[in-house]
Length: 139
Image 1 (tube, rainbow, N blue to C red):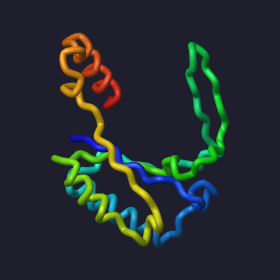
Image 2 (cartoon, rainbow, N blue to C red):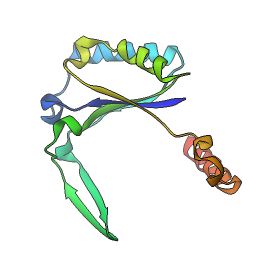
Image 3 (cartoon, rainbow, N blue to C red):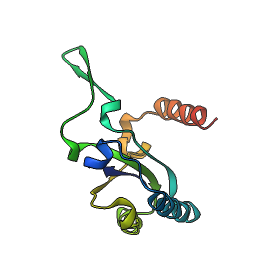
Image 4 (cartoon, helix red, strand yellow):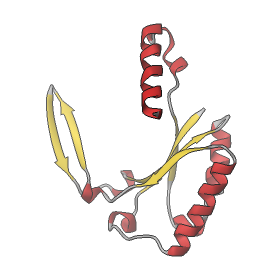
């Protein structure tokens, strides 16, 4: 099972405050632990929403809205992609995140859809297309 683990933004991340060397070192050690355990598929921090945009589709129209976005608690400041055997295992890994590195934060864990989750609507042709795309992305 794959999970996206999202670290919610806060006033500091939205202000673009860079983490200290100690925080970077603690997160580096944590990421190394995840990688050594074979559960880390990827992860990155994100720039504040002031450097981003949203693209909204409504009634066939496309609207681009530049950041910043007001609802900080709804924004994502960074993420990991983890592969574990269960949601509970993903939770256990997240609980090991160094508190000194993330401060007061909320982390959301969401399972990523797999091909079998779509049932018969995900036809053999669509599965083949998905496999080709994944192979192309890896190279």
